Image (cartoon, rainbow, N blue to C red):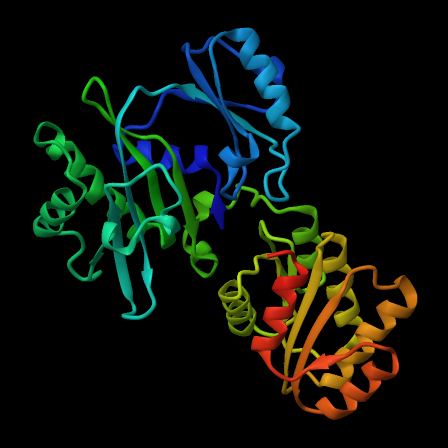
Amino acid sequence: MRLLEHQAKALLRSYGIPVPKGYVIRDVDELMEMPIPAIVKAQVPVGGRGKAGAIKKVMNRDDAKNAILQVFETNVNGYFPKEILVEEYLSIAKEVYIGVTIDRGVGLPVMLASPDGGVDIEQVPEERIGRFIIHPFIGVQEYHVREILSFIKVPQGISDLAGRIIKNLWNIFWSLDCELLEINPLVLTDDDKIVAADAKMTINDDALYRHREFSELEEELTPLEKEARKNSLVLVQLDGNIAVIANGAGLTMATLDNLSFYGGKGGIFLDLGGTDDPKKVECALELALRATPRVVLINIFGGMTRCDSVASGIISVKNRLGLNVPIVIRLKGTNERLAQEMLKREGIFVLEELDEACKIASKLGGY
């Protein structure tokens, strides 16, 4: 479950981590007294809000009303905000990054820290990101805190508070079964305060039964994601323009990674799962097409999912709806030759290698 920024900040506040003063509105008429200047921020469960124009600084009440109306109409990677956070503007002296996630390579939590907060952490050079493995049996110790504070170069005068924030971040992560908890940026203000200016928090879905406090929160899903879930499909809308359909979460992620290697960017992550039902393939392809991608990349490893069943679903959509975007297909496994023949008769060609498929899809996507 991905929490919205204001939900994550409420949890940070409850654990003693300072956050900006602010409140949430669902309509411009709910705007109350506010500090000036202020920030209005779309509440959506994805990144890219700033680039989408969904975070705005306002200097007075009229500015705020105009900005709120604009932000409610802004599409942020498939999400239109239902809520907007209005909060105080921070006078920033320094921004750092701090977060906790799981290092699947070592099978343990890892605390990440960088002196370069406030930007896409994925773009920060490797040498500017510190990784501190935390064994859950001992948690965050004083030596962890000293190493992290030294790495992100927090001024001595606020190191005690920064240290408590680091420990409490770990306490939240571990006690609430998080997959990801990050503060970016953690802001050092001109008047020597330290405040969590933004926060992301993802709870492990398989652990939600232990946390009844989240049972009333409605997870933000796009209309396509909701429809996919109704049809027992896993779909995640991303910010690229290539719809990726594969069977199995691992293969789908591997396909996205390979696509990224060739410069392409996924717009849809769609896990077909294990199925031998052409109707499910039809449903998946129709959902992918409704996201209006520039190209659809299908990568199927046929085991229980027979390649000829996948081909039947694709052909059915072609004959019923037409295919107005190029489709790049790689099919391997059970009945692949039969599937290739079926598709070729329809003028649809199949590739043998994933590298070639990703390279072509990236090119067709304009990357």
